[in-house]
Length: 377
Image (cartoon, rainbow, N blue to C red):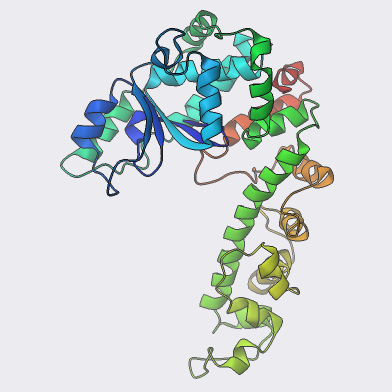
């Protein structure tokens, strides 16, 4: 499974859901859909098409879209949908997409890309089983177990057997439009390969992804302080006198007693929006985290994991624009490139960003491997 571009995701058929528009390219879906899939909404979502193979969509004479360019253009125009595939359709879509976007990429380099994405997909295949009762979940598990990926030799053979439907120049305008919608890992690869022309797009995507991590972290910090407010360390961080269950925390005098308490009692969820930060201008999240660490451990040594104080401050400082400039982009990527760090782009939903692929790109950059040049968009 992978993010194609924008909010168009390619997913194996055993993970089909009903809550968004989909394009079905698998011979399995009739049985899977109608025999096992318990509808989780009042009706099925709109289907763009339901076919067995990619050829059924791109055949010049009888295909719905007439070419692979027509298929990708339709998906780009949709902006948000799921492409539901079996393994064969997954492989063909992947190869056609990579060949379209990277006209000079060799099969040897493309294999490594495919390998990181299919490995990431395989590790996801036993999650999110939602289908109905009466063995539906078990059927999903069995269908997932039947998914196998290509070996390197098989991939190279398939790569060589697939050609784009049109001349490379026929894809230029579509390729340029897709550049603005590609996933952050492809945009970072492009930047590390020397492409600075997509910083505007990359800055917005990076702000959104890292901002979501900041949101999760601040929610944790605030909950941590609130749940432990009767303990001395929490009271120290909040700068309040000792309190107990005898005291009313909902009293307006307490709620408005300081900037930190007003922030603590505000249950708004979007912490890095301009509106929220304007209501709490004196609250800096990295400082709150450092204060908690100091109060609990007695040490000011930062424990940042993959969301560094610097990254938190970068999101905070750019809240008015909701994007990152070239300097901020470089700062975050330079931290990512360090050998003893974990990626700030890691997420519970690994479909959003393939960090395994990102780390492959970082390896190429750190070793000055000329292979990185193949990822220039």
